[in-house]
Amino acid sequence: MKKLLNILTIGTAFLFASCDKEATELTAQSSAAVAFIHAAPTPPPAAGTTAPAVDILIDDLLSNGSRRLSYGLVSAGGGVGNGGAYMPITPGSRTIKISPDSGKTNFINATLQFEAKKAYTVVAYDTLAASGTRTLRAVQLTDDLTVPSGTNVHVRFLHLAPLAPAVDITLLRTSPSTDSVTLTNRTYLGTAPNATALSAFAPIPGGTYTIRVKLPGTQTVVATFALGANLSSGRIVTLAAIGTARGQALGAMLLRHY
Image 1 (cartoon, rainbow, N blue to C red):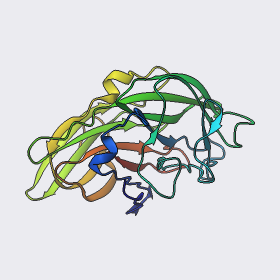
Image 2: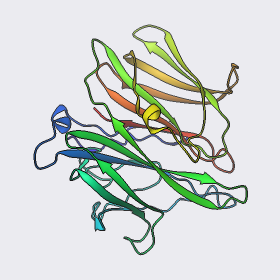
Image 3: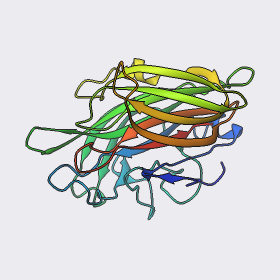
């Protein structure tokens, strides 16, 4: 695995985690793999302050060492700092805890299933009640790391911004030729996300892209983020909208799986 690349900052943080091909070839010693996304912002009235960095515990064992996972970032082979996004995990039923203090208290405490020879992304995100009370949730996505065909890139989008309305996402390609792909009416994950539907990647032509976030069914742009060449041919990526859209501007993050 290559080192985690924090390449670009526009609005809030974009994070790019890269993995070489061999990172997806799971061995007998690491027969399943998991990456983590911390997309849980500080709720109102504290929005705008920094959400706490967290530890990741697997079966009550601290798995990120001294490298705590900060808001808007993804894990890097056991924590932010080095390695690729994925860390090895033993197949079967595993207890996953996400904690601000090494397990003394837990934002998330979930039992998840991991199958041999598969890769997963666990997303920690935030559902905000009307009072602004924090209720953290997690969704486990299954990552299809099949290499894209031809010059395509595989992309999926997650709406992880509490209090933000549904949005249309236009991916505008400026090179090698002008083109666009629009993902319509994407809504916040909410309390009962469909993990199967959210896990799916869609093929689009590789190239240099900009994201335009629009109000659904309109051409009203509410946020724009440049991706540069990070949707180059052959890559597999997750794009996500983050923030609260109330006291904390919408941002975006990108996890490169391959």
